[in-house]
Structures are given as C-alpha cells and as structure tokens.
Length: 510
Image 1 (cartoon, rainbow, N blue to C red):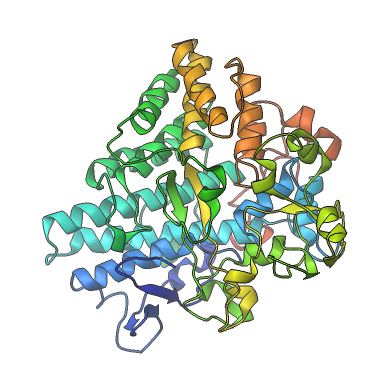
Image 2: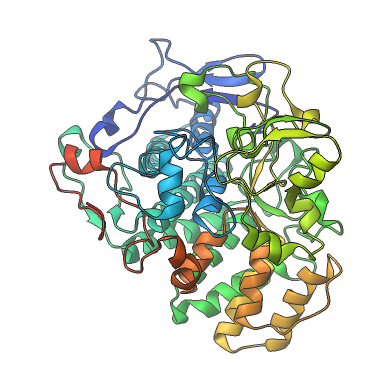
C-alpha cells in the first residue's frame, strides 16, 4: 500500500519496452478506498494534470512501479537477488518451475533465458512515468511553489532509483530523461555506466534539498530528504571510485550521526524491524509498502494489486503447522549461510529451521534444492493472510530497501577504504553488533562485508556486495559466475530485435 493520505492505488497494465514506449498513458478515476488508474475515455495524458490532485495521482503512478514484481515473469528483486547470491538457491517445484531464477542462480542465462525482461520492463516503466510527470509538472501553471518543489524532487528521486537498478543489473542501458517521439523509439542507443551514474547522481542532488526531513504519519511511503541523501551516498560508494568516497562518507555521517535530523535510530530489538505491524519504524530509511486493501485476485496482472507476492514464493510448500502459511518453496537457504549464522543471534529472526518445525509436528514438502532452511524475514504468516481477494497475491509484507544498520556499515566501509577515522568506523561496526549482543571486532573490510551478509540477509544486498567488492568470482565461481560476464544479466532479446541491433547485447551472452 502506498500509504499517502491513507489512499491505495492500482494502475492499468502497461508493458514497457523501448519499442512501445508511446503506449504509456496515465488515466485516473477516484474510488472510496484507493486511487485506481483505469481508462475512462475522458481523461488522457494531454488533458489530465490540471491541478495538484491530478499531478499527485500521476506521481503515485510512478511510486507504484516500485511495488511491481511480475512484469515479464516473476522478478521480485529481493528474493531473486538472494537466489543469485550465496545465501539462497532458486528452489521451486523443479528446475523448470521458474527457469529464469534457476539460470540466474547458476549463471547460465542467455539472451532469452533469465529475469531480464521483467527487470528491464519494470525499471524503464518507472523511468518513463517519472519523465512524463516531470514534464507535466514543469508545464503546470496551477501548482503552488511548495507542492511543485516537493513532487519534482520525488519524481527525480524515483527516476534515479530505477536507473540505479538498471545500471547495476544491465550496465549499458539507454539514458532517457524525456518522453520520446514515436519516430525515435527504435533508435535509442545505450550509454555507458559512467553516464548513467552521473545522471543518477544529478537527479539525487537535485532531489534532496526539495524533500522534507521527516514524513508525516498520513504520508508514510513518500520519499524523505534522508532517503535521497542515503541513496546518493550508496550510489557514490557502489561506483568504486576513490574520489567519491569522502562525499559518500560525509553523506552517510549526516544520516547516521546521533541526533540526526531525520529521526533514524537503531531499534533495540532486531526482530522488531521486520514485524508487519511495525512498518516505517525508526530504523527504516527506504521502505516499499504492500497491503491487502486492494483485495486483488487477477493472476493475469499481479502488479495491479498492492500485495507482496515474493512472500508467497519464499514460504514452505504445503506447510501445515503453527505460525506460518503455506508458500511455494522458493529460495531455500544455503547451508553456507546457515553455518555462518547458526551461532549468530540474528539467526532466529532471519532463518526458519524446517527440521525443527517437523520435529515439533509440522509438515511441508521439500522441493527443488531443498535444504530444510527457509527465509523468515519475509515469510508468509498466518496472522497476515488475506481474507479477501486471492490470498497469495495480497501479502501485506513490506520490502525494506535501506535501513540504518545498512548505512552504518556503508559509512564504516567508506572510512576504511579512505583510511580515515578508524575510531568512527569501529564505532559504527560495533553498534550494529552490540544491538544483538555481539562483541566488537576490528573494522576491516572483510569483517564489514561479513557483517553485512549476516545483518542484511535476504534484503537484496549480498549479490551486489560480492560484485562490487571483487569477491564474486571466489564466492560464486563454483556456481558458474564468470568475471567479465556475470556482473550483468543479458539485455532482453526482444529489445535487440525490435531496435534491429541498435541496442547491443552484453558481453558473454548470445
């Protein structure tokens, strides 16, 4: 649920590719409990956006894409990235259940096999919607200065968010910052990662001064100044450019320092971070909300609802017992992570011990790549199973994209890489460990990255951490990872075909 003014919204299924970008039209109709964008034949892109209410609804349509997980296949970012890392296998009923997941897990993707269509479509849809709303805001004459400043900043943040995912997943992608005339749809060439990162930085620098430091209770889900600064710092860190590390560390420090202006603090109890009844808590910096209020039941367009279908994926198949609801058996946890966490206090919050549940009388089906260990942070809980719509599509379990422990560890990393302020770096690492009762350890890069694995398990960070730190070949090489290829996934073949080769395939893929 995008909990803006207690409203929910769903939007029309519009599939994006470079070749069909012109199909994007945003049309709106209001209902009592949520905003639903549906074609009515009267509101079009040209005659909409007449006032702040309509511009705001258009902005929500950009936010909405963050929730998507099923464009061009099931490609929910957090479980998919867990499967690509050494924390989980793909799972499912068999190797043919979600072959794109298995291909990513084994790094044997090709131009037609893998998660690329969904990830490309989702993120370019978000980019396009952000471009549309930015152009409409710029032309609007009825918006107050304060409203215009804030919604412009939000749209720029969102465009940066989608491009950050695109550049990390694909590398060379088209850089599109305005709506495209129909005649130019087939001629969009790719830009190198450096150009994409430069645009992401620009959008985030433009955005954060226009955003509020804190978000009102009835607007939870909207972007804050702290979220924009934290994402900018993360973008700077991820580029592995030593000249950018000091700025990253400074931005992280602004977020992490005691008494920060944004109200962030580590929760005393680690498990409380992930409770579905504790959304938007003080530790969370960027959270993608989900709800069951839409009571969605359309398997043909899962993104039209507000639920988190990823929760259904990671649950134990045909589970019968206490606490949990049945899922589909994807992302069984690797014994590598289990062994790394078995004596860690965070194990009980992060991982379900299926064998222990069976010993207590529960039953479930062990499926493909089963290890009898499952993701707990985002597991389907009986208490939150929807009683309306299709329950599997309506899990109200939010996705936490960034939180304070994450930024603590990223600041510590930046300081160590700068060889600057080792006392501060140690204090940040120690704070994360002390929260769960662990003793201090030296603030080395190896220790920081290991802490990130344990602290942030299943939150979508591990794969990219391995790639950017140069550890991926050592850790994932036995699974098929190859340097110079596996850092990125293939460009969707349909984009290459429709642009007649203007868009080029990534190295190593046919």
